[in-house]
Image (cartoon, rainbow over all chains, first blue to last red; front, side):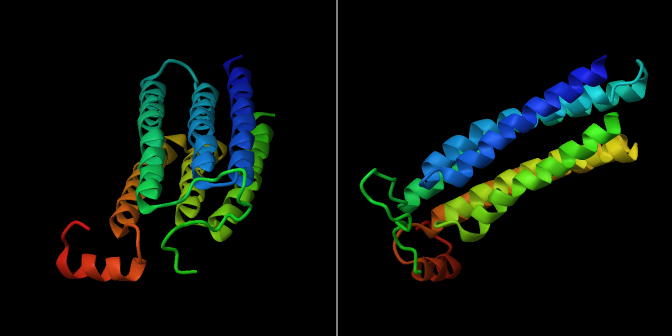
Length: 116
Length: 105
């Protein structure tokens, strides 16, 4: 039973990852892209690892407990690290002078200081 | 049935990575490229766990996935710090100044 719940969680994570991909591919500038990327990426990763945790459970042995503890540590680490990395990247872009997108300008090559 | 589902999920993950790879190659700014690379790295963690389930060696692949997550986080922070230090203005002059003096720009 837990196997099917895990597969359902992994399918849900795949849907959220599709949303992330569409957001990164379609949004106009790097701030909105990171808006789509940070949340969907974190949630889909957590759902996938929860699904893998439920699929890989067999019995109540010490190996299963160690494996589950490691997977929970990966979840906890991703929950902290993924938004932190996203925030660091976007803050670097903001201090670097990337111009935010406005509905007027159609061009996407707007980074100041890009040699191009 | 479970292994078939895991195969399909892994293939769909790789298939969904292709637009991110496109964004990492032709992204207009450097930050866009870093976003694409960051998400691909996070999903590679998941892909390593799925490979571990398929090979019945999940106890080994969990450690690999944990290391990969740590390395990905550190690489993103280091790249963000470097891009921030390069700063606005002309990139080459900032790079030379950082290499020569090592002081804050």
